[in-house]
View (cartoon, rainbow, N blue to C red):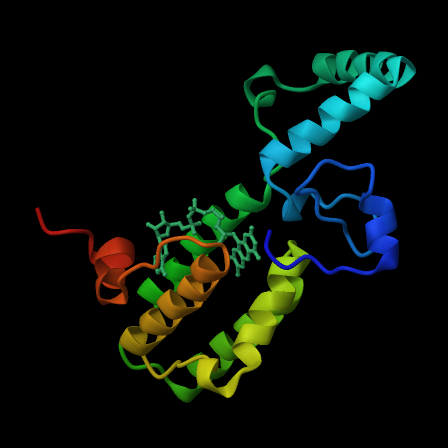
Length: 184
Ligand code: FAD
């Protein structure tokens, strides 16, 4: 992800790792902050550098394969992109289900949710940047009703799109994408 924290310790831990690996605050690689491609490159490098480790891993994976239901064996923990896609689905769906006019209580609840979300999102570099973006008074959540909240979420998503060098979404169409569906 964009914007991993730097620092001497992080640089030290990172020096033997392939490009793109983001470290957790404890200095270990953070899977939920890293793309699947970088994670795979790291695993490949680790396997190549140690035959002993490879043997141990093979033993472990054999043991696991006998106890894991076969239908789920191809399903892996999410990387930063899979986690992001699922999370945006949840976030935009929250705006789609939001009342057209929200009561003060509904607004307070959503504000709390967004505050907690921005602290607990498991890709910590993503969460840090998102919190910083939300802390700017110009980007404070707009929660009076669905139209406002849906647009705000679209702008929030576009802020991340910009940071990652992705195309921005035209927010006039957020409702077609996330609530009503497109006209045929
Ligand atoms: P996504 O960006 O996941 O979008 C999914 C779908 O939403 C798109 O296909 C499109 O139909 C629709 N869409 C796109 N933009 C908008 C919009 N503005 N409004 C409405 N709908 C839209 N990844 C990192 O690598 N670094 C980060 O720092 C980072 N921060 C993140 C912060 C948050 C809060 C979240 C939820 C995710 C973050 N991600 C980050 C993940 C990143 O945003 C993407 O989810 C991931 O890169 C996968 O992108 P994608 O191209 O598949 O589509």
